[in-house]
Image (cartoon, rainbow, N blue to C red; front, side, top):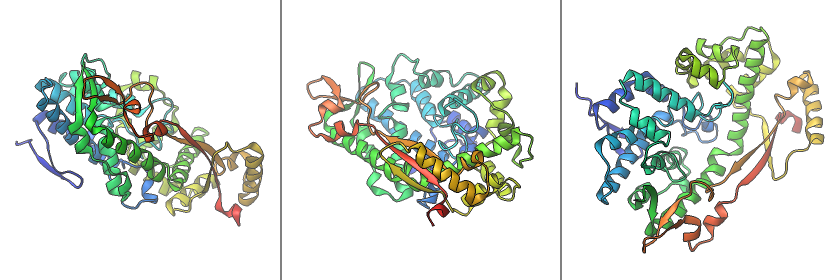
Length: 409
């Protein structure tokens, strides 16, 4: 069987599957599951075109990684075939552990486990199934390999992951201000003493990249309507879990039921491989299918929230520069209790406060390094003659308040 297939991607055109191992990994049930997980969660409630999946993103990131490795090789950076394949697989699988609706439910189905950790567990399981073929991939993913620039290509403030998702999300949302010159940035990458750097002539492309990222966060990822929909989805899962654990019957798919019935932790994943297999069955369809049942549930909170989300009758939301005070929320809780005839405990499902933050660039930690023409390496914030990058290093936090829209009438 010829496994060197060519895929047609709407963003980059033709993408090559370079070898049999990568083909077999793409064919695996873990990876095929990414077809059923939308890249931007529920953001299509704001941008109807945002229906692309983690499957699209993973393949696009693999394509860009191939371009980056070829470019570095062209500059004399020695990259063995084993390293090449390993980092290609690392970027292909970097989002393997995402649950339904990507980031939206990351901490709702189980507590304290980021998707990167689940990705690693899945990689280790794949490594067993492929007889150790992913040993080097895992070493790079965990940043244990002696050449750190490979890990930086997979995960850093200027990684291949971000280069694809910004361009792809911009394309599918139609927010073209968020588009970046990913190919130009890739051509400007280099390696100095094992660390990933950007050649000085690429500094304006980096500034555009950071500016586009900041814009995409406020205009797409943290759009207030998307935040409201995500808050509602989180509260629906929370309520379904509360009812289930109180012994109430809550219809759900078999895989989702297990996560509603149990308070699964990181320890459970590490000690019971069956939990990982159950998790690998979960995707967006489990949630939507269950919510369609829940809209007719006898519980007022679960049925009302589910019906509201299905019909896109979302909670009203407002942003503030200051935290929302108790006096405001207590008054709104009382109004909600009267509106729906529910208890204060139940009213908390409809009156929600929280915060979102946006920082395009964090100068501390693993920063973006610029290679000067004379050979010295400096932080991008110090290398730029424009003040924007320093400004984008500031973390901006906005506080939100979600309430039933009927309260405004």
